[in-house]
Image (cartoon, rainbow, N blue to C red; front, top):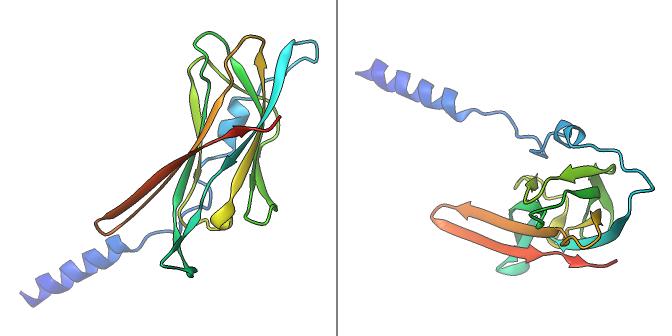
Length: 169
């Protein structure tokens, strides 16, 4: 009987050990597969959007924070046209650039969505993290939609909320 308990404890220990997760769960190779070359002669309308996201929020006081997972959703709202995202850059609370997910044109087919995930363990953005997106669309095409979905679960508690981008240019 004692050996069964020891075996059970060993099995639990083995399965409870896990590797540290990567900071970003999106492989950069995914973006290169979407790369496209745009010609200067293409008559496309330029835009720039700002999206606030939160990798942390305050909890109880300004001295205690709660970590969140953030999903950044980039959506082509056109059912007819392909759109082009030129850059996705992530900034922290202080306005420092943390990383560029891509800084070359990628395409989104009509009604297609792609995501960037900021893992819960990545708190580098802080409480005031944000993204800048640059994009081009065909004339008379609907603008892309950028949304942030922040979530966290702890025990039986769940927390989630969304943000939407604002066009700044």
